[in-house]
Length: 293
Image (spheres, rainbow, N blue to C red):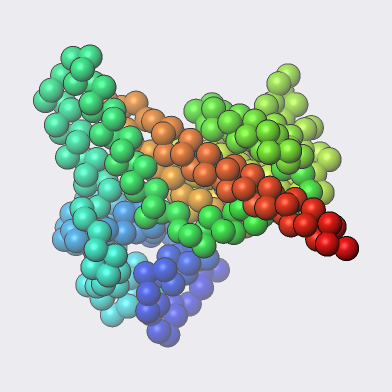
């Protein structure tokens, strides 16, 4: 049964985002389409007309109004104002998706000359990395690094396109002397590899649309064993993000229909090095305390 509409609307974009994630499973198919767009494209929601937003969500404008009212707003414009206020306070420029669309229009016109193609991929990846600062907050990073530090053993999984990110994370954490298991799924043993997970362990699951079934199954298995999950995904309501304790949202660039991993690798590097720095400081602190005794 769906939750009753709240008596009062959220007062910040962050509060609305949290409420959308909390209630996502209770929404109808149409409202889920809108919810995903609102979560992924907050700047577009702030700046575009209702007709444009509806077209991009593949729904009627009346559905946008119904969505806003279901979260306590008088109408869609009140919800848009919430995002517009946040946009102005952050001094943000064009929404990420709009900038990517403009890049795509430019690249379609320039053709596939080697020099042009390199420039296009560089620009697309630069946009994605810049956008990472909008989708991953300081508090998100703090929570992620703390979860890695506090876990007894880290399990890292990512299949198909996500495999390079997962393998880099596992390698880097092992280099930082963190007990880490890389769930590579060799011989179809991915689920077997997480059967030893305990409540003090952490699964880092990396997955992007269309979301590898293996990764989704591992997240479910980890949660069933009482283990925590840190998800790196392109949507806050993806099958790996929804059950997770912590979600780091990464939206990669797409040039000529090829999606990059530059922002994901940047995030993975930041996570691993943050942990390594903190682990090193902890060791130095213990040594100093021991010497002082």
